[in-house]
Length: 178
Image (cartoon, rainbow, N blue to C red; front, side, top):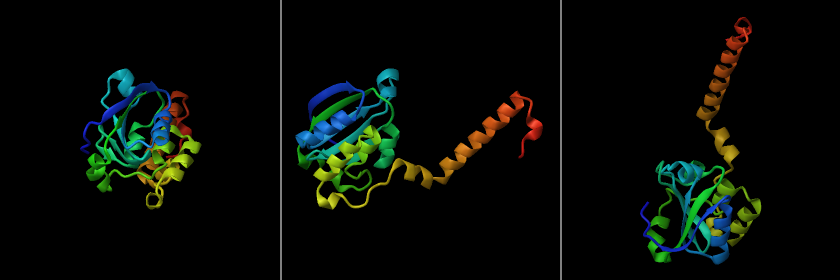
């Protein structure tokens, strides 16, 4: 994703990224925010998430580390704080090309849901969004997880391995049912 550098409005370390999302919404900001999660802040990792806004409403999300977009990018960046956040203002014309692409598009309330979990902010954001952007939601994190059979199977296999390991530890291997 190629977005020109905007005018820096705010640079902070915050516990809740919802603070920045709310600020962008309140100011009806057109531009973008760069979120660096705890790993990047504390361990020098390279993970950064970018969320673009049009009149304060999120449009796109992109993760620079994983090169993922949309809901997947938000999942890559989400986690416990702190977050280093930079908020930039940018002319809407500078975002036209990026916003024309559907690859990284997110539903209006999804960044608030995934990064903050603030239901009131999700509702406020959806209320501020233009009608043509409300369409179908990207679903909840639980729905996304349940739809991915490989993740469920990986957790089951991990649980089986852990059970075998503990059974060996406690001398109960003869009662395991493979």
